[in-house]
Length: 193
View 1: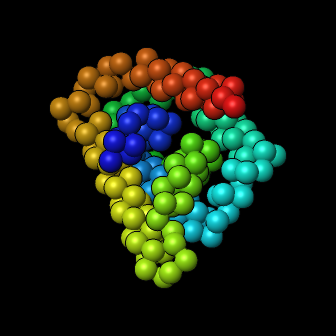
View 2: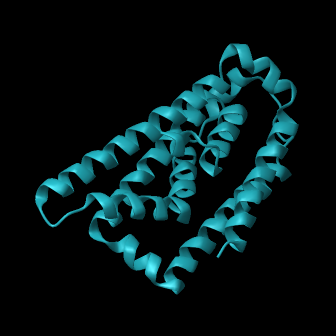
């Protein structure tokens, strides 16, 4: 649970989309993050994550793809920070569902830290007998549900009427901070060996 709620690139992206495009966008981004967990579960159970983690070229390809995507999102967040400062209610109509879903999905999928997390967890759970694999699958589904619930709660909280006025008044700075946060995660991912 602590891993899921600790701030990271997924959190920043859900926050950014929620504040900029409304609750619906934040929830779809959260669902994209949660759906990416299915992919992590699948390749962990098949042993592919172990193969990737042991092959430096493949691991670096995943790592740099993740860095590139976070860099793109960060730069886009900073450049467009003050582009659309309008009332939140108007934004609800223009949410590109697939775009938000894809952003959340790719943000989580291309995160090598998530891949290593699932590798470390699933290597402890998967056993040669079918019972161990059933437990691993149930744990994976639990992680998927936990991600979905947490990030949907984040989207709901940051689009609540209590916070809406405050966040809209500092939207440009918040967008710049989110963009800088995504750039920071990209840089840290790039320089980490």
